[in-house]
Image (cartoon, rainbow, N blue to C red; front, top):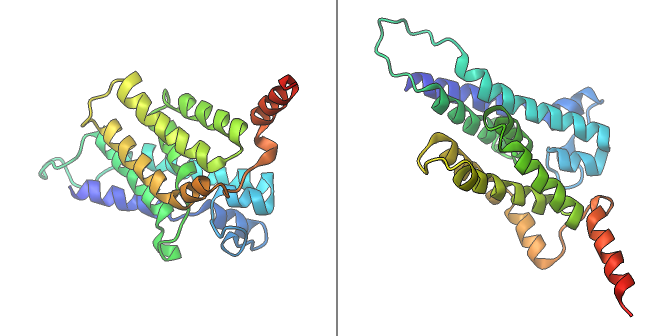
Length: 227
């Protein structure tokens, strides 16, 4: 139990290393909290600082998810072999650390528990632990963005897709570590996007029109068919 708690807290601390802050510091003190939506994630970075900045933020946030899920569980535990063995199975430790790093990103103590939405960090965790599900998530994300131009809708779609994949395609038991992690983290993504969901419902969500390639193509074809 102590091992699980310690490694969860280490993963949480890694989650506190915000890509937006790190890249902002390296780029001359840019503070994303004072720009655009005030979010420290890659989407706000793209809107306010451009593609290069946003890609750097994305890379940092994805990497910390990979590191927390893959490397933190493997840290040698200091208790010797003669001590009582309360160690968790490695799979459960990996997913527990995945939860820790996601919560660290979404609710960092260093920023007064006001962090990002956890999408890039969770993508890193999924990429590290559920590589077979990652193409499904990416395909859904890209298709929804190209059809609608809404990054938030694409993110919600990807979160829903991974639940479908784990329960139906991969057919994991409901109480297995991968399914419990997926359900919990997908619920977290939906909660963090609650304002976006309200704006989508009202029709005033921010849209990346340049990314809406398929949507515009369909509209042009429909317009051409009208008499």
